[in-house]
Image 1 (spheres, rainbow, N blue to C red):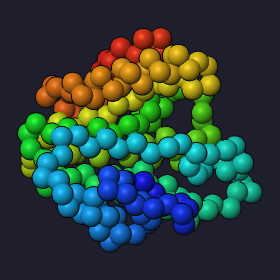
Image 2: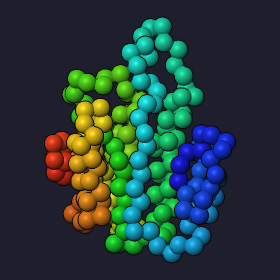
Image 3: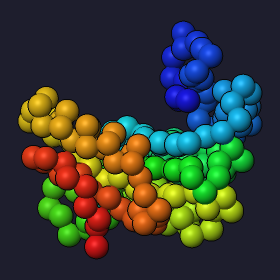
Length: 196
């Protein structure tokens, strides 16, 4: 499922588009996608970067806060994964897995880089909190975790591929003891490790 940002996005048998600000449409499209499926092994939720507020000009006495942009980010990073996880649980059991892809910047508050990206990293932090709550309370006993990689897209295609391979490998080999944990993947090898 993807956010429909262009009118020419067309649903297929295994992928649907919808407006992420319309809960009814999200539920309808999810049910459409699931109509021929009986079980979900893995729900992997990832949302992209670049969300308001995201630059130094958004934090001054002259700033006019754009509440519409805040709401778009909240829908994409928090409301939609909450809805999809609740709906997906209806197709899950104790062997199912739920992974939210966040970022180490969403919980490493003492860092000194990307300080202008409060919207993106703050809302990814909401996904970390959703993960903890679903890990504790989901009624299907599915394993719920957060992956927090650093994927060095700008530095090296090879390093990025290594990190992505490590993410894929851990996703398909997630264990019960990963429930409620943040798992980090850092260059150069992307070896998974728990955030403590």
